[in-house]
Length: 293
Image (cartoon, rainbow, N blue to C red; front, side):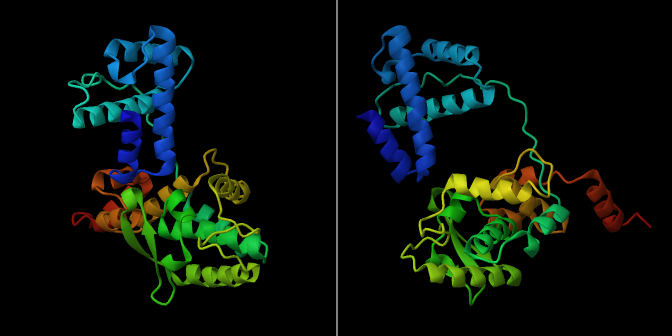
């Protein structure tokens, strides 16, 4: 009963996405299976830190990365905190746990030239699929929205006359993002092609069969077009989001404004995008410092 209550809590109170909840569910199920197989413990609520430590050792021996292990332990920790909250346990076995050390992932944004090149109209066929693909990449770059936010955009979230879209981010938090004229032009062309499909689907982005787009399709679109203009290994909606934030900051945007556009709850989350190149920093310094005569 406590597991079901926990997942209801994540969905209703914490407003986590279905993908996040599924990841938590999988982590807890795997750990529960480990408890049964290794210690004949049938109730995850009766675990101790020694059991969890054994699981960590088992995961390491199986070649699971420290980053993935830390995520799995985060799932357990959230569950035990929930049990404390509803008074089903008196102590969290992970209270004194220290996360495994991980190498900091370096996220390299696309350059401004790469983004100009990938959005060149000659890269796209003048049909429904081509215009849709161009609009998807354009929206990622000109609004900074997350992958799931783009997939869940509804036609009703558009306000073309006032040049903005309404986005529902993490924990269903609403924000308004302005649209530039070039994006609106592509959007209008896409809507014209979309109308010809006569789909009843209310999601903005659909396939040629009139069904909602999905995660794997988005990644295929990103890789298809970026493979021709970039040698970067990592190509994803998040890297475009990273590029959006980095390019805004490099061109003088205020950090708080970028935070609001990205839908971050604190500046700390936005500051990961402030690692400008040393050349950019030198330019700003040379232009701005009063002693640089």
